[in-house]
Image 1 (cartoon, rainbow, N blue to C red):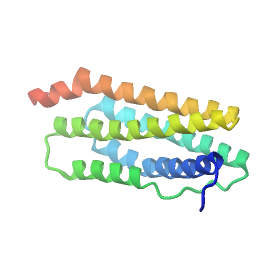
Image 2: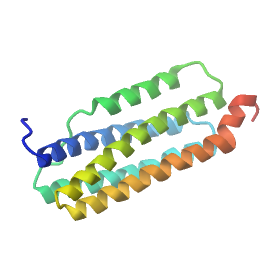
Image 3: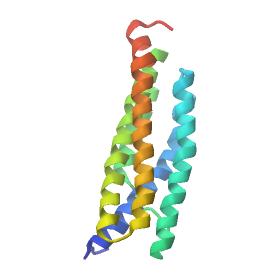
Image 4: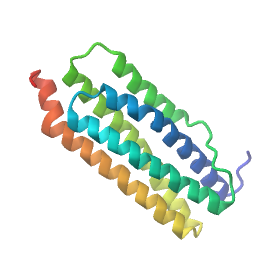
Length: 166
């Protein structure tokens, strides 16, 4: 597709992030099963529910634009998930694996924060105020998840991984 305007780019970026979220819907249950700290497992499970709502928000935006809610393959997310999968296949102590899962998850969150921040800015520029509100809501959730992962890492997981005691 030739992109001739910011609106065209906006739609393409929405397609990309929709696919990213759908890839994440498949990856989060695997991450939750791999996690050994209860708090980390619960965070992944909770974020699965949040991600489902984020997909619904994107579908609402596509409906408003009169465009089909179909994503284009997000190779960035595909790579991040592949790296996380590689970590889960490594021979690691449980606590170290949990620290690695947090690392992988935070890379995903930072990728999403960048994507949603850009989309929100485009929506504002294009006069899609309702879209901007929906995208800001998702951006806020991604930031909250990143902060929660940091809190879990610093208060428990990294300490256990360092000392090997749990």
